[in-house]
Image: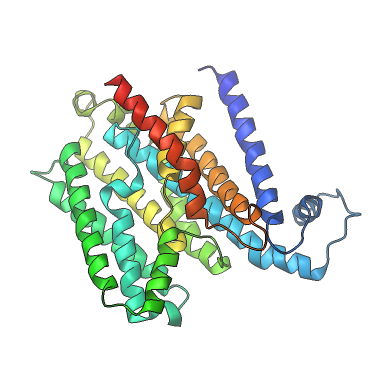
Length: 342
């Protein structure tokens, strides 16, 4: 793929990003037109356009304190999940790999259940996200510990360890659910669906640093990921310490995914389908694939959230449901395509 096509795709993704941001800010039960949102956006950026469009103080408050943090959280989480998915697909050399494959989601879910049982989520806004993050890190640490043999981390062993750890934490979660009160079970179910509802600037501050740091590190390691994606033998042939870089990439992808999941709950398919779609557009080179996946993931998640608020009058569909509805057909296509290749 030549530079002209990459630049064209970059422009399209950037325009799509701006468009979905404006759509997200205008979508919802409170009446705000697309033109009002664009005018407010230009005003905040200091650009003297659409100054004749009126916005009330109440509308500006809705934009500033309800829809803006929700949209920013969606951008951060979408970018983080897609980047992590691209990295894990490169590490495992498998287009069907996603962040949940090493136990992140099951560990975060278990941590969230513990927070709900103890009651931390009702006393502190950050209680549940922190517990979910700790659960995700513990699960992945256990996966890597089980997979490591004589200083090496074989991919197949890592995959099997991820499945086992995921089943273990799922079983522990199910055991906890049997002793939970009904209203706490409802809280758990709401969290596992995945949602951007009621997200505030505190959630943005909580996720901005670890997700942004993880994305930056992944981009800086794109060249090493290109070598690692060729295979372990090829990577060793050029002098790469395969275990070291595989462990670093897994740790960064885990931190980014855990930071994303702990804020929004479990959201599927973003880390699976977006990197694969971007790979078809920009190619397998991670120096281009990672930035494209980051923007594509942000666009996809914010778009799904906006559509969930627009499809039903006086109601909304959680973003986790929307990503599943849109992602499942594409996942089945990927599965069928890989079966045909074999």
